[in-house]
Length: 68
Image (cartoon, rainbow, N blue to C red; front, side):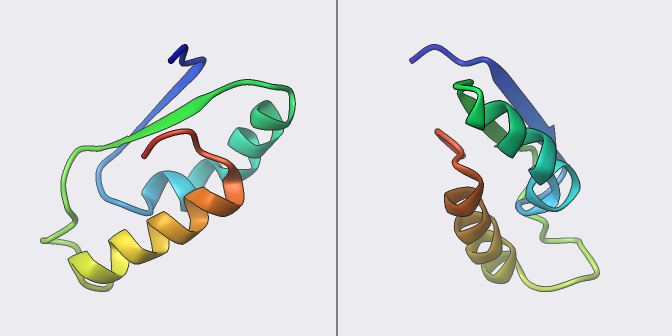
């Protein structure tokens, strides 16, 4: 798969929270976007690992992410 945008973040749901609008704009123009989370967010102060993954999964569908 050809990838146009590769977005990195510390935890699941960070990319979706911080740059969703930008990704949606480029995806609407036909670009393919992929998200790479560097950790599971296990040391984060907001939510659990499971919550973060669920939020990221749901948001990625809405945004149109090719792979997360």
